Length: 202
Image (tube, rainbow, N blue to C red; front, side, top):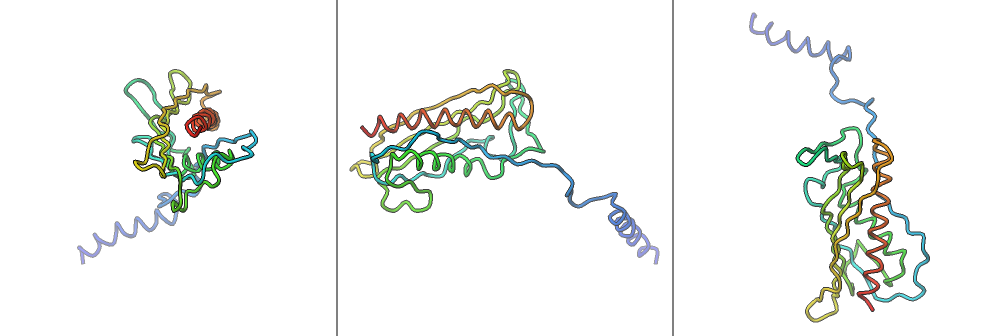
């Protein structure tokens, strides 16, 4: 009887706490904001495509930047993450979508795909090397390596392999301004990458 009482008391106490709202299994009231990295291409597309079909591989994001939480570099040895601000999707998916949208709108290729690689004439591989907000300098830092392969060549030749690094000032310490700075950095990288792809295809 005494053993039953000992077991029942903690269970009863937990039930009372849950009902009264003192303990919550989840928090619906947390204001977690979600964002996307976006880069809008305003220029007109090419009138005539320069190549056939481009397949964009899954973008590899190096650790520790391969998480949805926004990462801040506090100093040369310390990093932190923001719990209440995160990307809507994984960084890999987000950046791949960005490359897809930009290059599909460019008109460089007859077709751009992230769904079906069959029939591709070219393949694009991208790796995100740096992706953080630098607290000391007040800048968003984005570094991406991009390689373009000719899949029709006998040895699958590399047409282009370049690294792009951009640092854009963050207007304030808010997550919104950090995302805006990332968007501008990504836009600059995609614009430069587009020109390098055109040069590689000539």
